Image (spheres, rainbow, N blue to C red):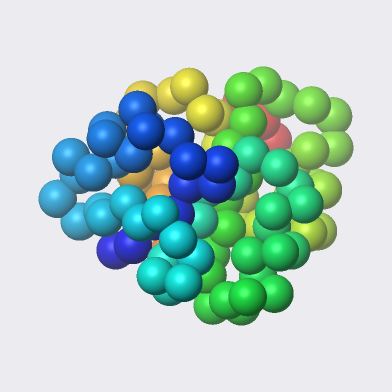
Length: 107
């Protein structure tokens, strides 16, 4: 499954790339199944180019209303940036199937 990181994060790309079913791509033109973004504005921009892409918002901490704002913008979830890579990979897999994924610590 193709995954886009926006903005690019070489360390995270390397960790995710070690997952047997995840290929990190550098360009939205590669038609990623899931995109991980850090800015809410990136959600609508990515979806405008590829409505089929599932977008997850990465955050470092919980902000009041952030989960609701992310979902309202069209994201399928909100996950912690600094969690275990295995948990993030699981969230990516779940998001790719259309599941809404919000880290319990952020809900």
